[in-house]
Length: 508
Image (cartoon, helix red, strand yellow):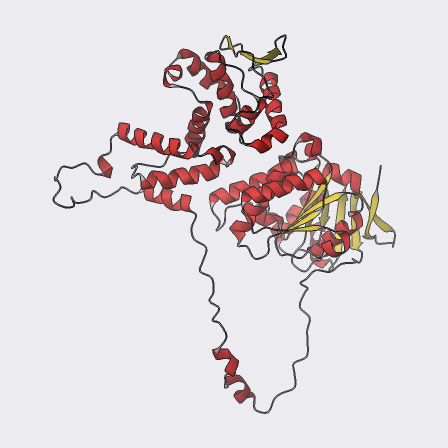
């Protein structure tokens, strides 16, 4: 079904139509300096398409929460944990509810982490819930910066990865990205390049005008027109808008933002005793609570720990009359260091909820505990940490770990991504030891999810890659064979619920 929504008028007064179905397949980029009418354009798009498609708005300033009064959008406060936001995003997709994620009141790094967790929750929804969703991200240069800023590298990578998934891989999952930015030069190029539709508003900097002209297929002399555009005027191009650049005047909207552009107001009449009015304190001032400005955000713990670990620890003097030659942290042997790291890793993974925490969260806890154990030397790299977590979650014993078959399994696991290695090694260990094939719930836990359907998709992915061959016996139990290992699991019931897997996974 083709639906054309009215965005405003063209130069001759004809209506400017936007094909919403084509937009879902080709995405949209909106650019314009502050005051160019960019937010007004997004509001017009959202209002006109509200009855046709589910909408999700990432709103850093809380301007779009007013859509809830007229169009029923659910307002989600971003001041939640990453796990809570991911769960809400998953339920948003399941129940096809339009929502506004408001990030007002959070600092920039918190906004980036919250938006990334929410977008990843939308992206990771089960296939059966891949319904069309219009995902609007205002101030996209904040969430997909072209260069690093004052935020931590972990937050930047997390946010940029989520935005890249939205624009590059979101179409197959029903996610249509609509990103708006004040500065094209500040927006990551791989994110901007995935949009096929463009609405370019007023801009003054040469670098932004040049990029806008390149995207619209205009020469540099024509780029000067972007300086002359009035508020609410945009140049449109794309399969959902027009096959050639056309000027559009955005139409009126029915809702309004909570904040608006400042207007000139006349000053009040002069007061006779103005000095007494200003310098005489109000009696209520002495009873008001003192509001202190919040201190600057602390540096991320991982950055501090990494810096401390890079510095050479000083050899401390003996305390309490100890022997002068007693070993210090600097004299820790490699065997002792490895023993302590293994103990810290075992403590973290011994927590039943560790399987459902992200690797970044586990890694931060690992670094903290390593410092508490006085482990010297540089911190373990994130890649090595993920590798060790995958091996540990497989449950392999020391004897099997020393075998040639396990070495082959480790080599094969490199052919899958880091997040899948734990599942692959769990199955390989079961095959090498001729154990029963792990159930869907056991595989799901190794992957860090409660969804048994996702576990079955992982097995299908391994088979597509030629790593395993699946078949069933006469009783319907599953067997997973590894041709390169010349081993296979014993038949196992895929539907059995293990005692250490949370009960809610049985309802999947």
